[in-house]
Structures are given as structure tokens and as C-alpha cells.
Length: 365
Image 1 (cartoon, rainbow, N blue to C red):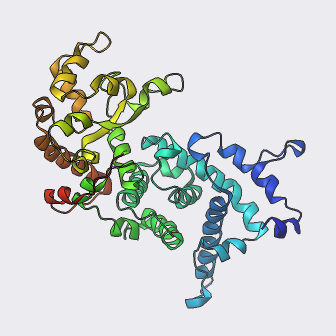
Image 2: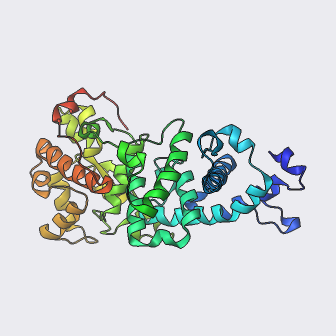
């Protein structure tokens, strides 16, 4: 594409990377000003442009009365990207860049603050393209609600892994149509399904659903056991010290002593985002012990009621935790997390089958 565009006197490398001598900022340096956009690849940006261009062509064809194969198909596939015209690039590059910035703002609203926490980078492509089309309308409550639901259905339904060009093309059309006429939900919303037993098969952060559930808990306002702050309260000056990471609630060493299988205690149900400081104090102690120590710490000073309120922000039942009741805790937390998943997806999940926990492989984080 760089060679093709050069024939029309467009330096694609300068367009992307910038050129200080020519006073060209470049798309990548501009995107990198947003921490969540630092890993956007040029090929992904070109896919977004191709989605916008092919959608525009399709709309023009339909308006002209064309039918069947005469109508341009919306696409982000390789051959379509390679056919992207210079005029289309020049027309859509700025709106898409702005769309990515709006997408980053949306992600921060959903409590994503690091690229490593993003479940699917591929879902960012249609999200940015839709934002490019909507402009500031994405902030309107009804529109924002639909985008949010589509986004979480893609994550929790684990629909954006592997080759997803077809889903991108469908989503940009169907999401815009849903926003404009409100009739039919996009396929991603309709197709999304979360199996409750999946909670017992998510032991590591390599899974998109694992990342999504962790962020969903933070989005709901989970407060740190030690600092008593949420992820939204942090700024760059105290991010490293107070940043939240995923740690066990019932410590691994305590679980081992109780004869609990690693495949059971490594489930995301036994993990939550807390600070390094809080995790150090937890150590290998029983919850009934470490909660008392935390509450009595000079920097914490919380009574039971206030600590229980913090635990509730993590979807943790304080009674079972304080009683060191691992099985009761796991059952109650599953119910509470499933309720949050249902709310995010806007649809019910299937009945809980707790026996599925026993089939999980012995994988540790």
C-alpha cells in the first residue's frame, strides 16, 4: 500500500509515523498520547478505514437503487484493505482517529486503563469506526447504553477471538442500525452467551472473559482492602504503589493446607483486584485472621461494618469470608458475579451447575 500510495504522492509511512522535518505529526504519535491506544497497529487502522469506506459505498449503492451483487459489501478483509483508495484514506483518516480517541474515553469509563487489560484489541476496530460515525452522539444515554451492551456481549460472549473480519463488518452495520431505528439487536448481542460453569474454568488472565470479569468488578466500584480507593481514584503519581492487580481471596497456601484443589481455588471466583500492599498483609493467612489485621492497621482503621461494605464492592459475602467458609463463599460469589454479568450483557445466563468446578484442569496463574 505504501508503494501504491506513493504513485499518488502520498507517503503512507509519514502519514502513520509522522515526519518532523515536514511538520507532519502522524497518526501513530497522536494515538500514542492515549495510553489505551499505544498498541494500535497500522493494519488495524486500515481495517477501520476499510469498514467506513465500504459502508459508505454500500449506502450509496442502496440509495442509487442497486440490488443483489451490485451492492457493495461491508468488509475489513485483506483484499479490500489492499484496494482502499487514496481518496478514501484521506477522507476517513481524521474521523477514524477521532473515533479511536472517543473509543479510549469509552474504555476508561468502563474501567479499562491499561492495554494489557483489554480482552480483545480486535473489538477496538469496529468500536472506533462506530465512534467515527456517531461523533459526540455516542454520549447520549440511550446510544451509550447500546454501545456498552454490545461491547460487553462481545467480551463475555468471547466473540472477538480468532478471525473476526466478518463479525466486524456485521457489527458496524447492525450496531449503527440498532442505534438509529432501535429494532433488531446486532448479532453479537444476540449470539452472546455466558455459561455459568465458565467461571470455574477461568484460572488465568490469558482469557478474554477473565480480563472482562476482573474489569467488570472494578467498573462496579471495587475498593481496595488497604487503600480504600477504587481504580478511578488513582492518578499517575500513585498508580504504581496503589494500582490494583488480581490476587487470591482465600490464599493459596491456606487452601493447600485445607486440601482444596488448585483447580478450585485458582478460579476467578477466588480472585479479586487488590493492591500489592493489601496482598502482602493477606499473605497465607485465613480470611478471618487477615481481615482483623487489615482493619486494625494504623493506615486502615475500619470497623466490621465498613470493611464489610468494602468487601461488598468486590461481590464478596462478608459472612462466609469471615467464617473461613470456602465453599459457601464460592457459591455466594458465583451468584453475585453472575448477576453483574447478566446486567452487563442485558440477558439472563443459564442455571448454575456447580459440579463443573470439579472438571477444571489443575492450572495455576
